[in-house]
Image (tube, rainbow, N blue to C red; front, side, top):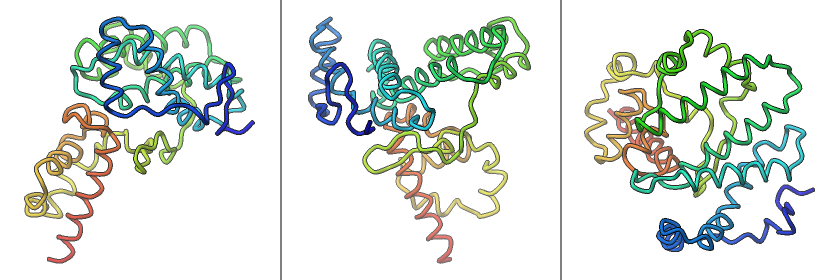
Length: 260
């Protein structure tokens, strides 16, 4: 079966609708008022997003229909839990929710056997992480999660590692507007802090030549060690936009430094 023409409940995903930003906002207004028809239309209008993420897992020897339907569950959860007041683009919020749902399904069906006790600890830690993130609006540390569930940090790390599948840092996660996001883009760069390479390259002058938004992105990414997702949430744009602005800013700074 072609990944580009998935038949789900008689619907050809190659012909799925694509909502404009205006349509999305109008539908959200109706959804907030409890309009079930608007909710269904919003779900159908975002199935292309589910399909694009499902393709990333095509090498897992799982039925593509099953993965697509599991992804749809993640989409529905994202819609039901999305908070527009935070100022984050819906796709930015939905992508990790959809991927998480598919990964949980794959872990539960993994041929590598993991003890039930380890699975219970891992799922409890993941659930606690989601709840703490939603409550505090920031991602908790492993130590905070461990304290919340009454276990040691080592036990939590071991359990989470046990249910994880190896992933390449260069695995594409999502593409938006021609910008591809990779796993490595979502990882904090703890080594590239100001005291390391920033001071050595004397980037102050180069930073001053950037626009305010680009400068803020560089400072958050390389001075504070924030992930692109964290930067996107803080300044209210998509992760794809952060990735594009970051690359352009670094290129501009590099050009300036090489010309000096």
